[in-house]
Amino acid sequence: MQRQDPTGVRRILVVANETVAGRHLLQEIERRAAQGEHEVLVIAPALAPRLKFLVSDVDGGIRKAEERVRESVDALTRAGVTCRGEVGDSDPLLAIEDALSQFPADEIIISTHPRGRSNWLEKRVVPRAEERFDLPLTHVVVDLEAERAEQPAGISGDAA
Image (cartoon, rainbow, N blue to C red; front, side):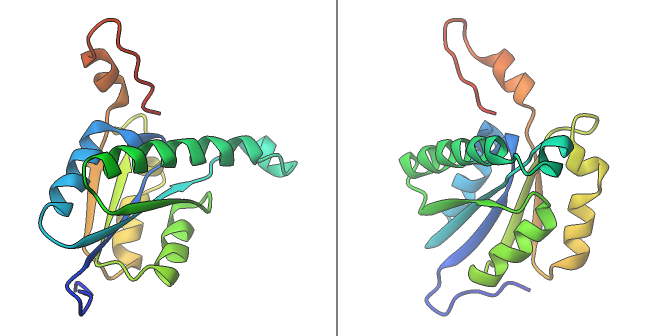
């Protein structure tokens, strides 16, 4: 059930890591935002290789997540979307839970790489989120390799 804000503002929680600035995800957010008053919170879990995590060297993962969030928020803002972004817990389900404690979302969008390249799909993040959170959830698949291949020669665009 959607928890529509009494003011009519639709709150959308977006959770993505490397795919956070992917064209397909940005288009999906823009489409939803165009439906009326909205507020979008983009969360990118800070990921770090297990060895670095064990020795508490996660700064690089946090920095990369901050860069991805900034790129996504900048693109959405240019498109007229009211949004902000944050780096979340490395566990996407905990990142969602943390975000929902401060941001009463009406819906959740989770973005992943395609099957076979997605750690989150391997770990069943999407179905586990559907079971855990009583909100409408949309899964958006972003194929960054295909997006890069579609770019005309001479245009650089590191969307990850």
